[in-house]
Length: 427
Image (cartoon, rainbow, N blue to C red; front, side, top):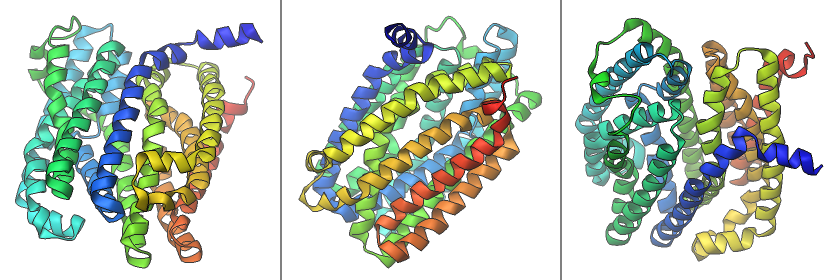
């Protein structure tokens, strides 16, 4: 038994998880402080408003980056030993990112008033979208560089940038929210990640793997077409899920109350905080690793090793969070947020199903199974919206959480069906 534990601890996933542990801890702590400040200043209704802008910004940012992040990571990792080939992907990735981010920025600036009314139901927040449009190119370029660093498996730089981003995000949120209330919190939400580009530029400026000149090479149509498979997957994923969340959140506001929508959004933010320990490790280690595996037996072994770590961890964390949910809400939020407690059990069940699905979903990404990925993603998000509406009508606000868990259960079953031969074949 002891030998098995030692062997498990020696796996690459655990090593990478250990390397990203500090980053994750910092992100969790800054996230908790940020939630506490925002909750204290804005109350549940303000948190719901922030949630709407967060979903909208995620959609625009995914378009601005071209959705090529995972594709860049995959091909940089795959062709890391061929300078000629990965240089082609560096330059092509840059021109895609530059062109799309400039376009998105102009759309945001010229449509600021429209987006403010449609997203936040008030024209007074128009300046937020002016700022967002002016800085979105910085965010897009930072994401491009992070995907390159991840592809080259320069984990220390990747972790350092993530830590810096968390700290900068905390400072921005606290200072702006305390001084300017909801307006400041909205500004911080759409700008802080762009500032991190300065830190990224400093850390990668002396990289031995590439030079800045490589980014300004020729645009390759063939490389762009290969990245397009990942672009389609990422853009669909990063648009349909936030859009689904916006629809459900708006449904709660209309059919329940804005405060209930804020409580639901607060539970989502708690999930986002503790799930970073998993999502960070999967994005830094798992995707590049899957990209290098060739046979079904290798992929199956990797998937099972991840599940052996993931499921026990999630079960323990979930039980602890349910047991101490009163104190978690007291620490993270203000007095008006005790209603969040009712969401914990079902939300945490949904989180387990979600992460279990993601482990298989990364295979679709790594192997560029574009059509399958898009169909599954759209279907699961449609299920989330429909089931949430049905259950909200039946059980009130908690129905949105039931819909979340039910949708990911359906998605997990679909993924198991897709990969049944890979998972259960003994060949």
